[in-house]
Image 1 (tube, helix red, strand yellow):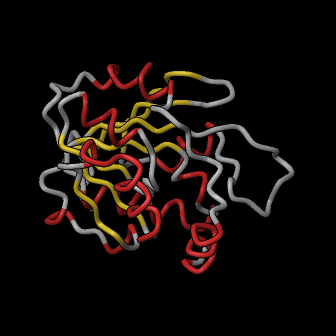
Image 2: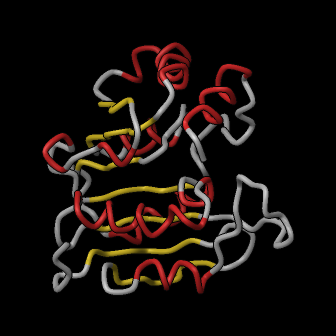
Length: 193
């Protein structure tokens, strides 16, 4: 999607995808990554998600990426002092470089991938593989939507799509199928972008 589209959605307050608390699938499946708790976690296209706070509460350093300044301002206003310590990069995810990530070794994607048209998804996965170190682990949560809907977002991303996107870059394990398919991803040691 074009940047203008997302800026307009935030300007108009059309952001109904946000939950009032941490995503239940994040809470359920995050332990599957078997992290120590002090890792830096990248959250692409984070918006004003309360998932950022939950990750911080688990002891992680949290690094959110968001295109919209409005989203980040709303997050800080709504969360107050609880938002302290969460770092942000305001801008296009593709402009984010490894040296800015403060050593992120994990990432969390809930609906960032489904917000992207299919032509952008491979670029996104390739970019993640470049900015995250070997062995970095991620939790990817997508969600089912109408297969006939082509004018998303959200856009349909099925299991075959996820495996194709991971090919050569990430090991992929399906944690849950259903309304919110969830995957554990780990950057392959043999992949060198």
